[in-house]
Every structure is written in C-alpha cells, then in structure tokens.
Length: 301
Image (cartoon, rainbow, N blue to C red):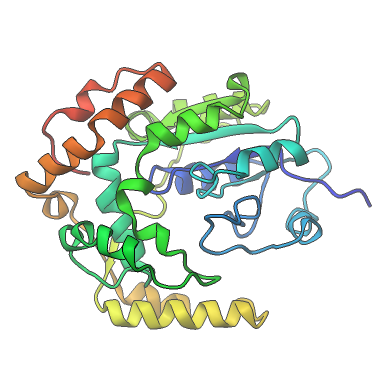
C-alpha cells in the first residue's frame, strides 16, 4: 500500500484558535485529521513532543483515512521551526498551509497559561515568568522528549511577524492562508467555509462552532506537573491511552479563567506593547493586514 501524507497543514501559532479550527475541520466527512492532531514530525528542532520520529511511523497516523479524504494535521510548532516548512515541502511538494494568528500581547499570557495548565511551567504568575526569561535563557533546563525549555521564552514564542516572514521565505504565498483569531471569533462560520474552499472541499453545512482548548488554569500546579511527567513516561514506554482516569483527574484539577481577571496590569501591558511593537508592524506588512488596533490599550482576552 502506498503511504499517504497530509497535504493540509495547520501550522500554528499556539493559542490562536488552531485547536478549534482543527476540530471543526476534522469533523468534516472529507477530512482526515491525524490523532494526535499535533504529531510535530517535521519540527524536531522545536517540537515539545514528537509522536513519530520516522516517516513510516508518521505516515501510519493516516493509514485509516478514506481514499478521497483530505489528510491534515495541526502541529503548532511548525510556524516557529527553522526547518519544518522546507521538510514538509520536500515530502509533500503540493502542501497547503493555514496559519492562525493573534495579537502577541494577548498570546503571551495565554501561552503561559497553557504551559502552566500542562505542567511545563512551574511559575504560576505570568509577570514573574516573563521577567524570568533572561535567567532561563542563560541557564536552560535540559531538553527532554516531552519538554523544550525554549517554550518558556515567551517573547520569542510570540514574535509572529518574524516567524511569518521566515515562513513566507520558503512557502509559496499562493498556498498559505492566514486566519486571525479576531475574525475566527467574530464569524467562525465564514472562516470555516473559506478554509474548506482553500482546501478544495465543499461546505458540509456545519452551523455549530464550539470553542476547544479555552484557557483554563490548574488548581494545583504541582499536580499538573506530576501528571505531565507521568504521561510523558508512559509515552516513552510505548503505553497509549488507558482508562481515561488521567484525563478525568486533569479535568478535575482545572478551572476556567476569566479573561478580564487574567489580563496584565497597566505596567505589564505597556511592556508587552513595547516588546512586540515592531514585530506587529512586521506581521502587518507580511500579511497585508492593518494591525494598528493591536497596539492600542485594551484588555487581554
């Protein structure tokens, strides 16, 4: 049997609506979305957890796809990887890319919240974690299969302008679609239909667009860290999902986050605007989108 590889890649960025869009697309009868949705295969330089290390194993993630289905995956590490796009285009010359984007001023605390929730960030307070970046860069913790310490460099993680510029230096612009979280929230049905058309798929009439991977925080960060390490150990041993008890306990340990309450204070918000100002202008030029409103004072969401 000839190995089939995906031709539709949702490449990030993290916490920009990729999970929701991937879930909606994955429910379309004409799409086969990989499980897990983020195998990270093409980004060994940055991916926190790769579910396949050989092309054969990566291809096996799609072996159950129907003959006419569009194969897809959604590894959010690909956008910031220095090598992923070239590796993808070598393996799949006709690949098409969806790039989800949001204001980095909002993205940075959201990424911190995700890493805290999944046990990879031990510092619960975002402002403290932000000011720890330099020290962490000078003395990074060892990289493991389940964790890349570079993920804790929030300024670098969220410089989407630089990442998109590098991405477009390799990927053909005609095969790249940008999706802004602002638009995804305002009119998810339109974004969904436009993405289907970009992938060459018909509208399936979907009218329900639930939000996936909304921001949550752990009641006990220590429990989240222990759970993450345990899950990573099981994966290394080749042990997959079991009873679902771990998922249930993790859900119990999580509580929703009020975006208004979690918004950075005025001083930190000003620092974030200053940090990302030039990069936002770079992103605007790269995408052809006016993003001046991102630099205005506003609450994080």
